[in-house]
Image (cartoon, rainbow, N blue to C red; front, side, top):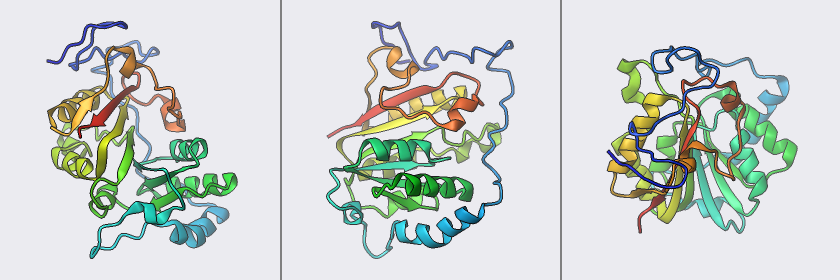
Length: 253
């Protein structure tokens, strides 16, 4: 068990004393999760179809199996390269891209509805610093060169709540190996979830990996949304069984 005594209270995964959703009257551990609502998708609008057909190909990350990609090649004068795996409705990507115009953002999502939504957001805002990978984010990471990512976000990934499916969760040892390879020394990784079992499991796996250091020094560091966090519509739905937790990690040099 990892334990910290600091301002804001002691904390430890299962570690951590995860706060239950305020509106739940029953035990949050035994209460069934609501649907996560990302399996299917609504039909795309006419505008969204045009964006998918005409804009997405222009903004797609060109992964080449014969050569590892240097993502700085995709942007003009990017100070940093950020990566978001599974961006959902895209609000976090577009919000961060807007607030950080000198940063190139690689955004990965497999669901067409989410991709179309983000395409609309960046077109409406005139953003020039987002590139898309509309496939499995693990394939994107495998196609990147070593030590090329300054910051990575994995926010509210699919929790695969059924026990027999939890091996499909993205935070696995081999994924963390791949992620560590592409992260720059002293780079930063943020993981967020509102599912108790995933919060415990992911933190345990990050802490077991030799490349990542948890930066929290008190409970408020992971219980409260970071100042630079952009809230998403998914997060506002409160579909999980706990209040969101935010784990920030630094990459060892």
